[in-house]
Image 1 (spheres, rainbow, N blue to C red):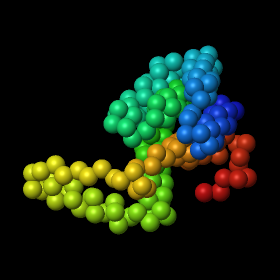
Image 2 (cartoon, rainbow, N blue to C red):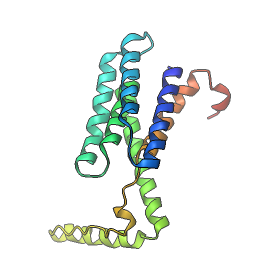
Image 3 (cartoon, helix red, strand yellow):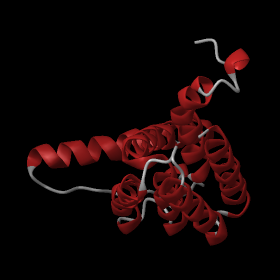
Image 4 (tube, rainbow, N blue to C red):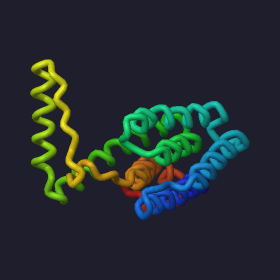
Length: 182
């Protein structure tokens, strides 16, 4: 598993680099990851099996799809997460999705703070909460100049989450024993 996870991390880092530079994730990275995951899990004795690989792919896809539908992320992010699920299986795919959303939230909040738009965000949030309690939907779109309206590359957060989730498995493989003192 060490080599497969290492190859996965390399391709996810390539996708994150592309996304950070161009705000696009090339389809070939996701396709190669899917081929790697399904091929490995189907044919290897150490693999998870085709069923778990397929469920991991579906979990990554279905858990990220609502964010795409509502405009929170691009299709490349959804495809990348589905591809990761095909390699790691459903249990770890759920972990990667969870930690990806956490990393995305922290990155977005840091970006808004650095841009100096935190007070604008809090005012809009206050209006939304007051509206919910009064029974009136009072959502205010951010101004185009606000940091909250900027589209961030999300593959770096997905890459960070993938590395975090796979770290224990890589440490337990024996190849990285000297680097893993936790």
